[in-house]
Image 1 (cartoon, helix red, strand yellow):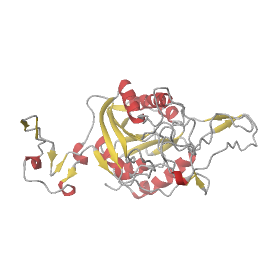
Image 2: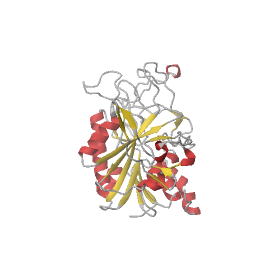
Image 3: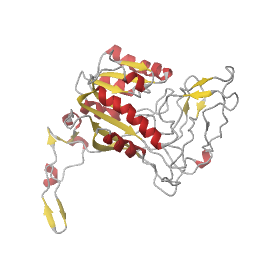
Image 4: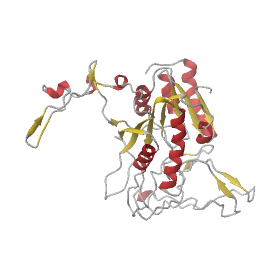
Length: 360
């Protein structure tokens, strides 16, 4: 299979063409459940000249993105065009009508990812959450591929089982993490992506959401993980206190008893990376709604894959994984359903491939 290439197509279809035990590491962020339509639908039957328009309710900017914003009404609420009866066919992930359907499809995708991973391979999975009776994520402004105007991506009609109440946090990331664990993955860690510049929300009955999860999962009990490559240097830490804590001991005092604790790993002047990563989101000038910040996936790449290894992103999107892989002397394979995004990502990665690899 050709390396440093983005394969256009459905991720499951492409994954099934890949050999077993081929990939060193997978770093990805699938489309979040119910967040937006990425424009990959095709229409079957009906009137070929029909534009298949479905009425939309405009977003009221004064109401922001609270949990109960009813004006975020669905752009489509069924699979047929209301004008000509054409059937909407779409293979993209994230438009399932229930959390359970979404989780089931995710398990199917990552079962194939596990197959193509080497026994020592890891999966770094970034996921966001959503609330009942609200958009499953934030509706941002962007540019629709092939259209110079502003575009608000629609949210499909969602159905919630009775166990979900209005305003409930669905818990999508953990539903998927537990489902993947039940399917054979080793769930090793939940990493918190803390965002200093989160999307504004108008809610007044809870805190503004300013974090997402990255789950570190492994195919086997023993796996490749280079902690030295991502250790935190002392230069980036506050001044060390003059006590045993500065030597790396997590000593504590509770219940009237003193515990000397165990030594936290320090090596070559640094400490083991913590599980909360504070990284700002970054704007992206091209026509894509959701892009990884490079700083977010650099630690995943450096810790999860050795030099000249192969990293997979089955939801390549804007191609950030490819950029980071080339810069860090790794190979990549990407999969992307939307052909316009494939072109966008290829154009973004090509200069780095042409000028040679730059060590991070």
